[in-house]
Length: 287
Image 1 (cartoon, one colour):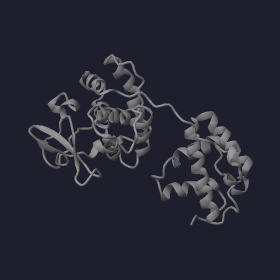
Image 2: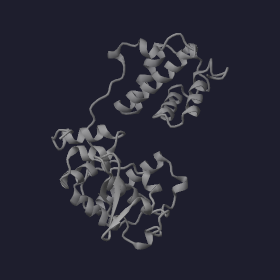
Image 3: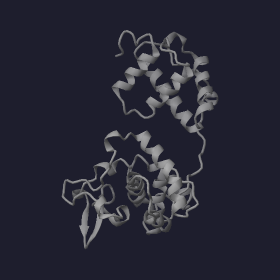
Image 4: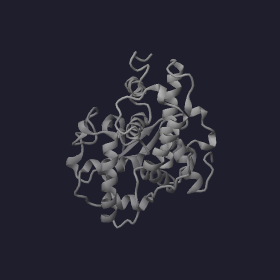
């Protein structure tokens, strides 16, 4: 239940929602856009929020963010106002009073560029003079299909070593974990960059792990990817999501069936895999 002040002020109510669940997708970004829309206003009384106000916010989003991002932010606003209605701060949710055809809609975005297995090897073998964190994070996502943040916590005991080669066990595929090839030599050109090979020791040494945030690391990767591609003589405009598509392409070239790499990507990025399989590989996701 919201505090007495938040019962009349939508901004304070929204802030309390963020405090309760700081990991709610897109909530902080939506709040940032709400503040821009209200031009620095400190308070937004619930009584001022109506369909005209919501339509104005939609127009604001259309000017500042992509259509799909705008759609996601609108959903966050609608969810917050649902919560406000549930707690009795408003009698109805104005987002739900807007005809569906007048609400923001998603559009089919083009797939970002991705790397073939050969291009990935070229990129990985190209010497770069910028921070190694970028190199490790992007290659980790390309070769594992995992979230880049998992690289921070990867320890040697999570890898399996067979005949001098390393493998990353992946759960959720068939009855036993699948051993995903983990090319340590591609990640770390210099042995000194490896963490000490002890069970609880981290595989990667990240210089700025303590200060890293998801938004800052994505900005850094995007800035450096262009330079990295240029140095590798690869003419592609890589996006952070390119890592997921690169992993799918790599798995396809290795001969794995679509259910395999959908299982690797997991539920969170399942739609990413389905889009790639259907549109690029022109295969059925369940075959």
